[in-house]
Length: 152
Image (cartoon, rainbow, N blue to C red; front, side):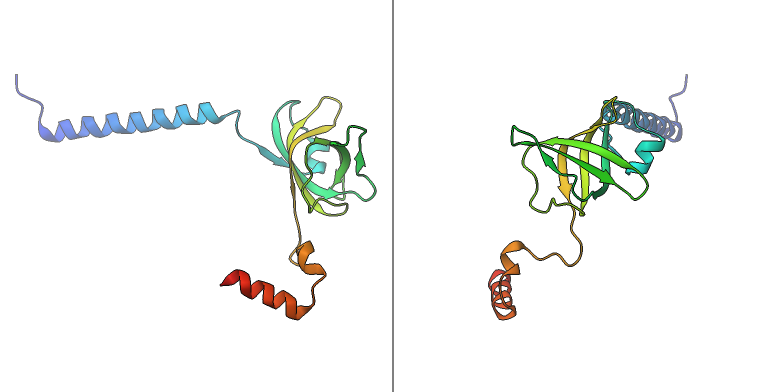
């Protein structure tokens, strides 16, 4: 019997490498299937809610006069809307400094069967006109001096 030609040997190695690469991709996708976090806005949750307990992100605007702090002092309830629908949210933890009513928020967590979104993490969003609280009370000359000090 003749030995396998070098050309065929390379072809077999390339096929084995491709099969191994595809298998690694399938295994990685299968392992991360529960780690994916889908992004929803309130109107999407109202029309096609995720399964209760599925990790998702909820983005929208914190509604005016909706933030309520519970008696434990750590848990807050608020409502997120997008102009079409509203979703009640509960969060326990330290609230970001930029988290205020009528501002943008992204909450990472899970929707419960009763329709309440229980957030594990809150990310407050700000607009392009954001000025840190420390700089709000300074005059323009002082602001420029502070910025100059930090950029040197």
